[in-house]
Image 1: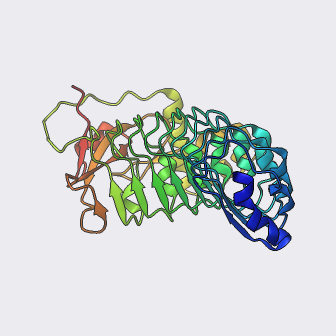
Image 2: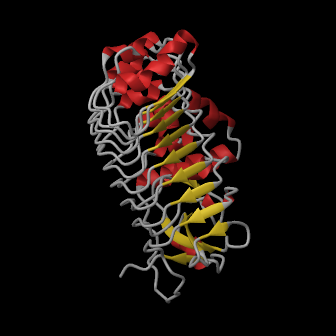
Length: 347
């Protein structure tokens, strides 16, 4: 039956550009498919395919392939031969594994849809897909995202909702072209500071996680949409508390002295620092006090600032004030802080 359905297209031979074999009950690829070397679009969605035959490797001109809603349990390795492929749909299968070698030939891929599968991890080799612009991995079982994923510098959309992700790598800051980031319904407890450096980000959805506070600088992003309902966000309920005096370590005192001298253009210290790469590395992790503006290294007081973002972006309905992480260098600054900064109460 499948071969008979394919006959009209086969008569077109190399001239056939598009073939639709959706919901035909196919359990294997029809014979003769490999002769259609000029094919650019192929839909096999809604069949019963478990494997792909070697004939698929002959379709080197294929640009769009839809294998959604089949019975695949891994991404077929034959796909690495599809060197012209730009859009690949693999949603609604039973995929629990991606062979690393499959990425070798997919250098032109711009869209990858793996929604509704059973993936628990992504191979680091996914970084080879340098031209990817949209990746969708909703409704899988992912527990983490490899830092190599953040090498996909052309990525504009990333969908990761309904997984089991606990943390997002700090390297996400390298996805500088990302505009849409969907992380809803995971188990994320803390967003990385690098998120605040993604200046092109316009849509952020972190609804349904375990987030209490947003990273420093998030309020400076030009977000158009922010969704964060169903998170245990800090609430603005001020209480008074007695704060202890600061007791800084010798390392912290030394680091703060050096950082102050560098700010004051101490020429001799600048020269000495150029010869000591280890000290340069240590001091590169400095942060700035939100009150006095002075630099510090590794000891700080974590505070929260409640930012009204509802006027300039579309937000979750119940969101009035966004709790943003803010760092102070000392209790002295805390006691002289602006009234919009609050310490975090420990229950």
